[in-house]
Length: 282
Image: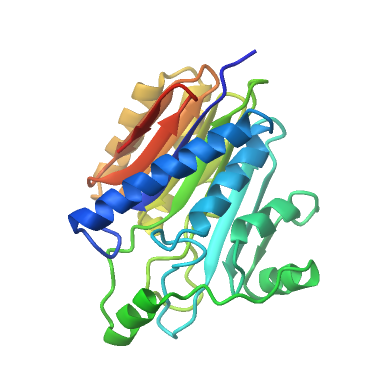
């Protein structure tokens, strides 16, 4: 049996506020969610757990995913989320879905279908047809920011990578966008550039989606580890490629051996990991 372990992230501290109280609140929330998710992991698969953890993160307005998502240039919220199963290599996700409380749950439902990545109106219509009720994810803070046209740094996403007792890996990522973006903009979160898992490693990214896609960051790290590089080597090479254009990104990872790894190009990402005996929050 493998010791179950997981790592989560909640974007960058620069998301909307940088005051000490908000930083502390995010760290405390990460610790709470990591602990709840690890308890859940003890009785569930890695795939089920990453969805559960992302749902908890989506429900916390401190983070830019689900409730508390950023508002786009036309005043609407469009969210993206995905999951990837390291065992089956199946990937499912939604892009620019609207008025859904938990996009990660819609991504989970799509795993059972042949058409596993849906976007825009199609994603929203699918959610409605499967019982996901309309839900306004905007919070007063986001509305005030939009009305004042005061954008954050656009570096908010949440994610989880889990390793279960049977040695199975999975990754999930969810985002509310970067705020004030053009309608139709697509982030990295529902692509393998931002969310990746196979039998060797799982990765979830946060940061500026365009930078992450340009580096194919999660898939690049995952492929390099699969081909024999150490986690450190894979991260070093991938982030060197990112630095060539001053890319803004962070990535958490967990290997099948239980090795935890994380790195950001522009400090500092908020994350937590736990194996049940220890909960580390940063």
